[in-house]
Image (cartoon, rainbow, N blue to C red; front, side):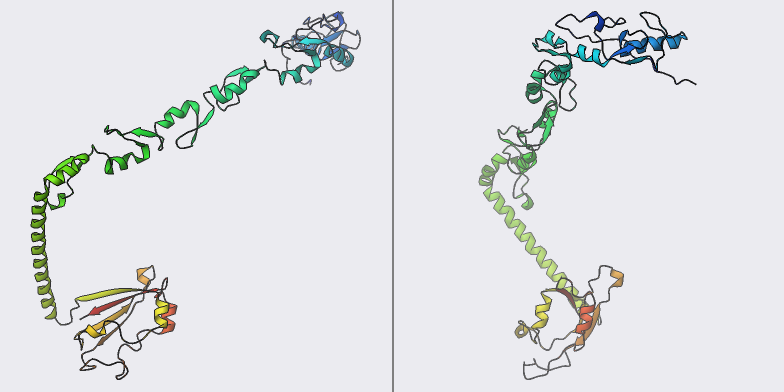
Length: 379
């Protein structure tokens, strides 16, 4: 079964403008143009454009007719009777032609074979804009100017924030650019960066309405920021009176709170076994403190002795999972240890001798970032 053939495009030889008239023998008898990719028939020696003779042969095959030479009607075999005519091709390509852009004032003339090389640099050749998304086509001589100064799709750098945008999108960018200078919407006369606008309105704009700085004392006046100084000067006595009232109320509140606290402490002291004082210490730089550990403290001289309460010390386990924490606690009472304050160097030291071993202290999560937490609870 013969292989199906695709019908070639419409026949056409060279359509260039030749300076000199092309010889008849170098003209295709089908398209009547100078031979393009010249071929010759073997039995009769007639010349055709390659695409013209293929179009002729394909048309006959499609119609189911015999293949023959269009000039002398001799029978042809597509595979055996048509071959390249390189001599004719070389000759036709040596003819001088005008630039296809001569209609646009290009003065170039040269051999047909040099046409493509010339068109690659011809200033009058129509070429597409090289900017992304631009569909405009123009003469090469105007391309550079268009690409860099006129094209709407040329990329520009915002002169305020340095972000790159196509020129046609720059206006929309300016509407949101954080560095773009804008005038205060309240018309105070200042120009600020868009990103600073909120801060300007909150802390600087003279036309923003603000509350009196003494509003927490009871002054309910509101005014524009520019009137603040005038208000403070004119209402000095009012603010002083409000401050006195506030101070009196605060003193009364503190007195009431102190009385309630004292009553609470008394009530707790009358309930044996109730804990009512809990303190927590965060001790940083623990390794150095442990190295220099010694008895006694800087506040020993002013502490009550003997201390009348039982003390429970707790070393906090700093593991992240609360369920896995294993805190260490120990209790002691000072009431029976000494009747008077122990003196350093004369009395034996007293305390929780085996509260936690150094090995256990290092193994657990009791020391994190060279810091421990000790909690003291007093009964």
